[in-house]
Image 1: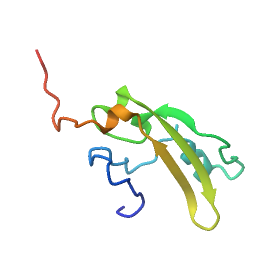
Image 2 (image 1 turned 30 degrees about the horizontal axis):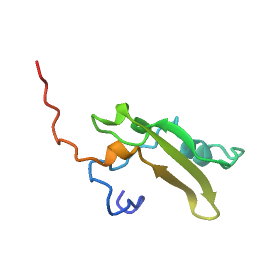
Image 3 (image 1 turned 135 degrees about the vertical axis):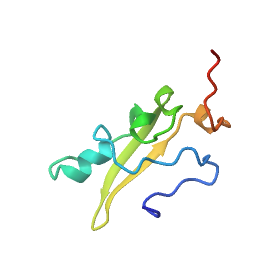
Length: 95
């Protein structure tokens, strides 16, 4: 699925979007419901709707999705600033 998304240069690689679009995302509604209206404003959604890694459930992001005629749906994700801090690649259990 390479090429279906583009991340800003400063976004850590661990925040790579999931391959399967979450049914709770606004983009999913636009893609699969012909009568769904484009969003008029950005909306909050759990980061785990877009990212499949262990820290994602702790964060909320802003999603704005809209149709692009003849192309599909474009989505802009505004990440929580704390998501941009360095993240450990493995979760260490303290027990």
